[in-house]
Length: 422
Image (cartoon, rainbow, N blue to C red; front, top):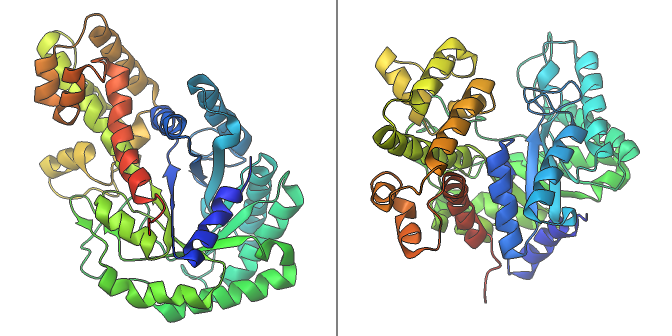
């Protein structure tokens, strides 16, 4: 594996022919399968990232350590025929967040062990996020403390790494998983804030991790993109002009944009042109997965009405285990039910790996695989896939339909991040 693809992003930006890369932030096996198949077909490399809450030395909410996640992704790559050398693994928001209830020194020690585990497992792109306060500290820390802790983590990664990784710094990001209130306050990061982030991190890294600073490739900023339960704030270039121009004062860097889910293709392409070369996406991919599964579920209810619906199983599961959605979805019971299944924030994604959901989706797939799915029902319930099924380009099989639904989103990103032609 090599970090060359990532370092080339800044070279492309300086050359006036910017290109980008999509960062796939998901631990769902079908999403990763779709992403790796997309890379196999395109001949490109693929960037898969795990967050500190998903994957850490204690297992995270997926139950996987960094080495376990690496093997999970590589096993899928082997199955679809993608060389492991074309898979770039990244760690997102690596810092004390999973342990912020502890005193700062204890939390940072846990974060240090985590990033060492990521580096030792061969993760090549590490986003350092030490912005959160720990026990007894304010929720948001001063820039110099954030930078000092980030540099400490980088030093641990440098010691543990089997191959030297690249780093991303900065923490001004949209709310993880989508906004929970109105987005009329959304503004891009101020240029002076970016300049301050760059300066304090440079000083901290040069003091305790000087070699790592040469491999800092990006700063995370808020370009003015976000999504809520039922709305998307689309990128407006005129509002980010000053932010984009600030890159000129930080040679060798590009911007990383989080929560680019649900952006139109033209907006994604403009983000890349303006220097936001790393585009993170997660919920939009599992949203597309859920759309396909629910379309298949509707077909199954027509063909096999005697069986319990997948959506019914998921509703029962989410009501029995509300911790992943109850603090995010307000309103009346009817409104909460709608959001549980159809919100852009897609909190249902936390439930697909449960034994109940896996059993239900497996049973659905088995029933619909016994005989070909009638093409008119594909037209009715999976209309975006209909023409390809009708022409014979896409088999009317459950797994193929789900994978293509996810790949349709990834193909938007592939076009948007392609090199700008002169």
